[in-house]
Every structure is written in C-alpha cells, then in structure tokens.
Length: 443
Image 1 (cartoon, rainbow, N blue to C red):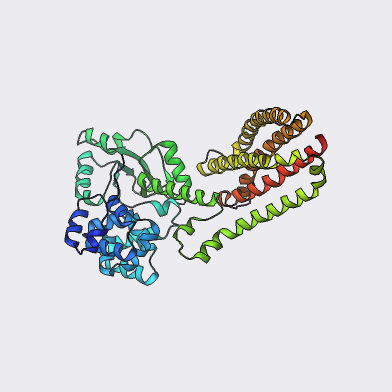
Image 2: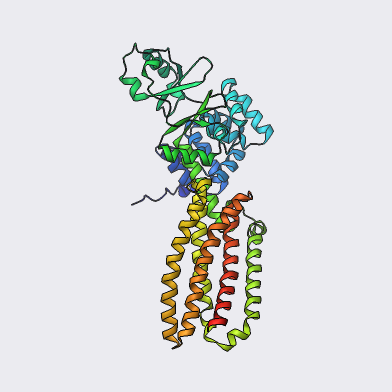
C-alpha cells in the first residue's frame, strides 16, 4: 500500500518551524517535495528556506518545473546561490537557465569560478538536446594510468561525483577510447593500466546535439544506466545518467497526453480562464467545423433517410465505432513515432499491419451488425446496408487514424498535437458519407 503524503500544514499554521525542520530532515527529498505540493507558494518558499542548504538543493530539483521556477524567484538570492553551488552541474544549469539574465549572472558570479564555468558551458546547449541533459561530473583517465592511480583520483573527488558506474578512458586530445566498469576496476591488480583493461567501446555513446527523445530511445534500447556524451570529434564532454532520462520520458509522455487531447501541458500551469480557453479553442473550433459538415451531409441525404427511417437509428453506432477505431489507430501511430518503433523504413509495414487488423475488425463488426440489424427489423437488406457501412467505415477510419500522424510528421507539425482533432472530425465526415451512400443504395 502506498503511504499517504505527509501533511505539514498544521505544523506551519501552529508556528512549529523547528519541529517541522527536524521532521523534514529525516525524509527523502522526493517525499519532502511531495509534502510541499498541496501548499500555496508562500508556504512552499517558507518551508524550503527552513531546510539546510544541501537538502534544500535536492528538494528544489524534485519539485515540478512550474513550482521550481516560482520558488527560485521567491527565495533570498544568497540562499539560492548556496543551493546552486551544491547541485550537480546539469541541475544547476537547469535552475540558472530559468532565471532572468541579471539574476542568473548574479548567481553565477557568486558560486565560484569553476562551478560557474561548468554551468556556463552547459547553458550553451539547447535544453532538449543531449548537451542540455548531460552533467560534467565524471572520471576520465588515460590508458596509461594505473588502476591504483585512478582509484586514488576517485577518492579525491568522491564527494562531487554522485553515482559512479564507470571510468572513461581518453587519449591526450580527450577523444573517447572506451570505458571500464567500477567493478572491473576494483577487481583489477593495482599495477595494471587502464589500456590493458579495455575490452570494448562503451555500449552507448551519445552525440552532444542529439535530441533528448532520441537519447531516451537509445537508453531504452541498450538498457544502460549512463552514457558518455561526445562532440563531432569524439571528444568526451560529459555524461547522461538514467535519472535524467526518466525525467525526459515523463516530460515527453505528458506532452503527448495533453496534445492528443487537443490541448497543451501549459494549460495545467496556467491559472487564467481566458488563457486556458485560448489553448483549447483552436482545435475545438476545428471539431465544430467537422460537426457542421456532418449536419450538411445529413441534410443532403434527408430524403434517403425518410424512405428508410430505420437507417437513422444506426447513425450514432456507425459514427461512434468508426471514431473509436480511428482514435486507436492514431494513438498507436503517434506512440510508435514518439518511441521510434515506427521509423522511416517501417512506415509501409506499419500501415499494412494496421489495415490487416482493421480488416479483421471490419469483418467481425460487419457480420455481427448485419445479423443483428436484419433480425431486429426483420429486413435483411437493411441489415446488409448497416453491416456493409460499418465494415467500410472501420477500414477507412483505421486508415485515416494511421496516415494522419504520418502526414503531420512529414510536414513538420507535431502529430500528437494535431492528430486527435483532425482524425475525429475526418472520421465523422467519412463514416457518415459511407453510411449515407451505402444505406441509400442498398436499403
């Protein structure tokens, strides 16, 4: 059973700040961040200010991006500077990068030359690339260095390393030669050189300009805990750890979720009603246009429906089922594009498989509805008309659901943002046209 988040509001209201600080000192930073989430921003800043610098820095990293931005603005500048100095370089760059120019420069000048230089280097990279994800804390050594020397070097900088899984081997130009796991390093003889221990190149090497989604896909494929980051000359720049990849996956999943709904993750962090409405309206207006078009289609085929009024009873079923099939196909395709499972060379294979699945569903639904509708109304021709319409609508909807995200990807429009509303409207129009055409000719 999952433990309930700690309720710290009573301690705040009663002014028991020392007791609160002692309590939070015993918790993991992620649990502290969870306990802060129900509080208003004023109380959140107050609690973060109570924590010691090291814990406050870890808690700040665990907060949601919107909360983190507001806390950094509300904290005293000297407290924020001390917290940034305690962070890993990648986390420090994230915090400083969200400050305004004057505040960022003030913090960078106060944290020390070495730390400031590291953060400035990371801020040069786009935040959604490997360079924006990487941290500079790592251990790199020459192939001629002995095991004993490297272990002593690790001991000397152990407080700044965080999680260490391997040592990277580089040449004089810092070009990456390979890596040695910490286990192999500890089991080797002290006099052995790293060059003697290298057996193969790293399982995964990431280019500094790679997109973060591509990096996450590679981590999943190779199942690694960290990966070195290199430039175009294969020079070692930093490393990316799996905890940063988990954050990327969560972030990208959230984006896709909101965009499939025709909205935006920005809406969650926007308080104004007008702003929220503005984020939703464009795609809802597109759906409204589709609805008006379906009304015109119904009006055009009104005379056909009047001849066989029983056809009208099945309109919601045809549109609902085709809409569900189209949404499923669109979701599967968008997810395949996001995870890399649908690559350029696999597009036609993916479309073919989706249509095979749609054909099976069309046959099942078509036959079932033909029998049910024909028996229910004692009209075989009516049952045949509805069954054929269902089958055809399922095939067309599956095709539209699969092709639409691919089209938007080809024209450089985010498939997750545009596919949902477009597929819904297109399926409504297509299924109704199919039903009206087949129904009027068969029934």
